[in-house]
Image (tube, rainbow, N blue to C red; front, side, top):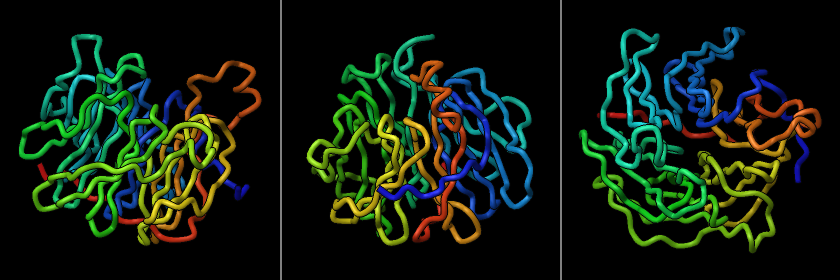
Length: 296
């Protein structure tokens, strides 16, 4: 393991920080605190504290779009203007959200054609009742069901592969992917954490410009890097047990940002891990890829 110096980019003590997304155009990093319904925006070059606005429900993931963001929340997918003004536009309802219960949206991102892919998480985080969806031209289509925690969604640089995990399975799958049609082929097990004796479960991920897949291991206290062939090539220690997702940002896309969580940590663990819940960062050995935006 590389015990590199991951430093604190923003001291926030988030409950469940997630889904960092870098806008090349705006030179801004966006991310969420799912449990508190917070969305953050931060320009590192300005030296300001992160700006925060709050939705009245949990927000699982976000993606870039013209004039703002799209956000997959507990109840559905919204379009948000930035800076915030007026009520968000509801694009589609979450078919698995039943009033104040059911499965909320979790991890997601856009593909090169501007489709927004977002998966759900089971209400008990264990039952196989969640799904992976794709939003295109106003229609939400299910691409995979019988999931417990949809996570780890990413695409290869040539758009030939879609990566995805059901976190509780501790396996990362890859699907042949047709970016023109949005069709996915038959999944294959690409990485098995049990076989590699890695701790924790695979959470949010990103792919760099060389096609290497970076994944946060929730409960494992590390970020791991896999080659396009699925070989473990590096592991980076994180100064808390629950890293949640990674993103490449900065002017050259060579800063790796890592969101983290304080949930599931008791008072003693929070004293032991004072950087839990913060936004962390480290220099990356290679550049990331520009994040596509939503074209809906």
